[in-house]
Every structure is written in C-alpha cells, then in structure tokens.
Amino acid sequence: MRKLRTSRRTSDMQKVPVEELRDRTYEILQHLSEWLLSKTETDIELRYLELGARRAAQGVSLADFSWSIVLTKEHLWDFLQRQGFLRSPVELYGEMELLRLLDQFFDHALCYAAEGYEQQARRERPAEARAGG
Image (cartoon, rainbow, N blue to C red; front, side):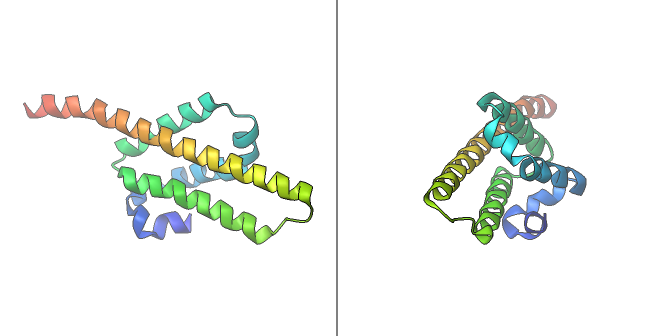
C-alpha cells in the first residue's frame, strides 16, 4: 500500500479511495493461490476488465494503473526472495512453477486491465462528443 501511495509512477492512484485500494491489493495477495490455481482465464479477464474500466472512470492514467500492477508483482517477488525457500531440486522446480504462474497471472491481469481501461475510454468519448457538440 505504501509503495502504491508514494511512488511517483503511481501518483494517480491517489484518486482511488484508500479502502478500495487496500481491498484490491489484499484480494490478490491473500487469495493468491486461488488466483493461480483455481481461477480460470475467464475469471481473470472479467475481474481485470472491470478493474481497468473502474480506474479509467476514476481518472487514473493507464500508465499509473499499469505501474500499480507491476509494483504489486515486484512486492510479491521481493517477499518470495526474502523467504529463500530453496532446499531441494523438487522445491526448486516448485518455485520455478510458482514464478511462472505469477508471471502469467500478472501479465494477463495487466493486459485485461488495459483492455477494460480502453473500453471505458471509448464509452466516455461519444458522451463527451455529444455534450460538446
């Protein structure tokens, strides 16, 4: 939370209510195994299309929103590195698989969020054109 609220790359995230930002961050971190192992591609798509559209409607820039996803991923990677849970070849394989799943999840989340953001921007453009003309 502190990184998202203080990074110059995510200054637009100040537009998101603190409770909402905390809830979305915890949604990922506390339910990570669910997101990685039992949620489908469609679940990720629907959740992040919605989240991208919401951030667009809140006036958060796409760059700041994208950086918020990247910072969350980096925070999680840092945590896993600090844990240093490599002990055997089997555990090494498990860690590599975990990192692959994390990368895949965050890459897909970022792309779907960008799509949702763009969809929201397209919905708002016609309304702005009608209001201005």
